[in-house]
Image 1 (cartoon, one colour):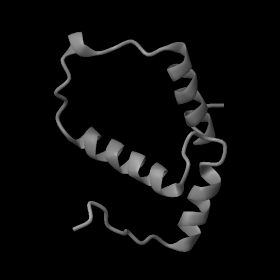
Image 2 (cartoon, one colour; image 1 turned 90 degrees about the vertical axis):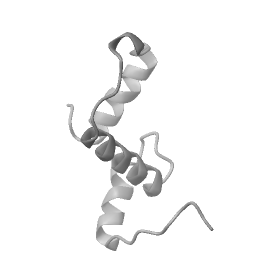
Image 3 (cartoon, one colour; image 1 turned 45 degrees about the vertical axis):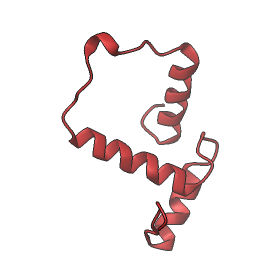
Length: 76
């Protein structure tokens, strides 16, 4: 039995997502959709992070996040 399933989305949405991820760190629409869905699911789950376990982000990681947010239209 496979660990993956196929989810169908409208082609116009797929094409928009494909354009949206151009120039980002995502290698495919599937990678982006999985990331978004995981983020959505984790946001709805109660946080179990101990504040002492939170790591500082490197400047490189912060810049990658900023770049992704710019590409998504959240930052100018």
